[in-house]
Length: 174
Image (cartoon, rainbow, N blue to C red):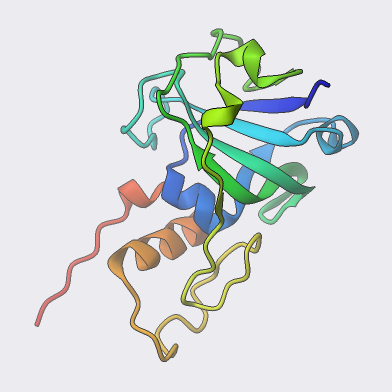
């Protein structure tokens, strides 16, 4: 049976996708997107804020879609939220070079991904108390009783300012 998959072409890093609980801000048909079970993120390395880990056009992360809702910073666009994810390994180059950064396929075999090899993980809850699927904000990070890691701070700052965590630099002087 076909699974119906959204494939997106994104510059956002894995850390930022997990911090945001999904991939955003897409111009898409919400009704069509809600009929999909999975989102596959492929790397856009040509964007000025691009994370540089994966090859251009490579599939690198798959999410099990939990909802499709208006994006927090642009209600005219949508965030595709996921509560479980799998990293793709090996990472096939699947982006066809299309102008539209969102496309749909019926099954993982259509995009050279072995579904049986995927290892699903829950989207982590951040130590700042942000629930899975919520957009993190900076409020409360400094007062939380647990220690905040650099990666968590970068992810929260990146989500707050709409940039990749790779573009956040933190200097600690002491």
